[in-house]
Image: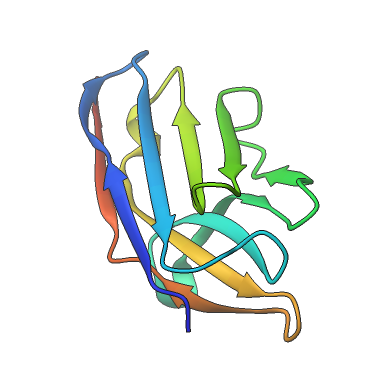
Length: 117
């Protein structure tokens, strides 16, 4: 199963920007859709996803402010977060969804994002 390691995150004032990166242990170009979530478990929020074809989705609250991208050559997926607001604060997790099963099967360890007003 693919292993995921996040980097980035940190603390920023409202209106600022942060960039998150997720590195996968294997080729993610065709077998996995990738996503960023805030929180884990039942209450988790799906922030952004990018499928194996490059099609992206965003939760309405971040549309126009966040950009998800994948670099298949480097097996990475990034989340550029702009115009950050205090409500964006939380633990962000990278995840991989196996396209064969349609399930989010692999998760990173999480990285904290804190936005102060």
